[in-house]
Image (cartoon, rainbow, N blue to C red; front, side):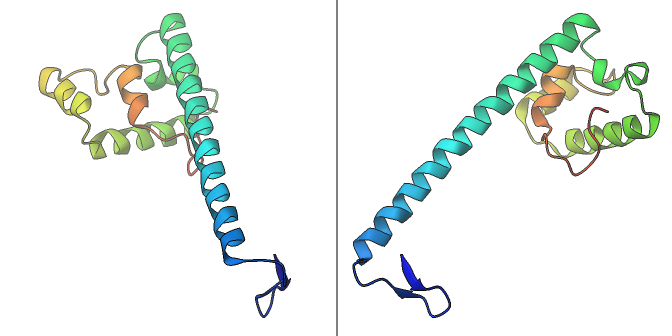
Length: 124
């Protein structure tokens, strides 16, 4: 749409309404993509929790024997601990109001408050 990207001069046939249309399209496209990524994250998280909970136990994420890397495991547990402590979700606070042990709620509660970002090693 620009003739010159340095001076930001638009091509003669471009109108402000064209720019607004592209902006709205871009906004809608981002929303569609974000919603799709969100659904993928929910599906992956749900399937992971179900698989490991059925094949091990509801606290599999805290079982160091299931990890191949002790350092990575300790980093993951520290991350989980921070996220649980930080969480203000009702289901987390209600869980700890009712239960003292084990240290973490079961996977379907604990992993709900975690992000699946790669700022720390996860699940190696």
